[in-house]
Image 1 (cartoon, rainbow, N blue to C red):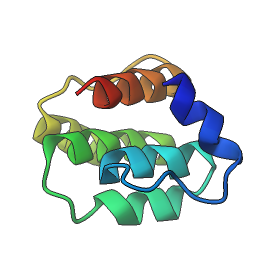
Image 2 (cartoon, rainbow, N blue to C red):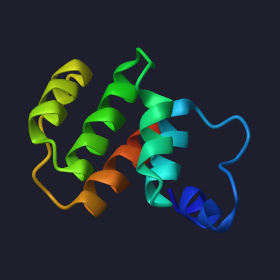
Image 3 (tube, helix red, strand yellow):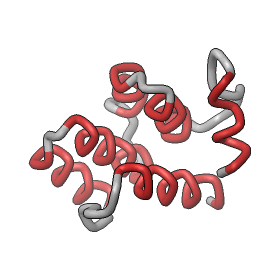
Image 4 (cartoon, one colour):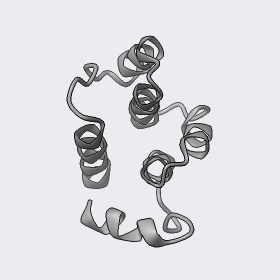
Length: 94
């Protein structure tokens, strides 16, 4: 995860990064719309998990709940920063 964080000063995520990780990268850069556009049409559980996180960031907890269920993950209740780190760590380890 440290490597992913180290790239946030770049203009774009590293080439070859999976879409859910690209979306997390853009979310960390503060570009919610770009992050959302990346995952909204992806069908994987990983993308659904990131999608849930993004709707939680947005404050739309009902929509976030739908995407947590699609991802097979419990709805997060910790800080957004902790959730971002947890998702990033899990996706990077996969």
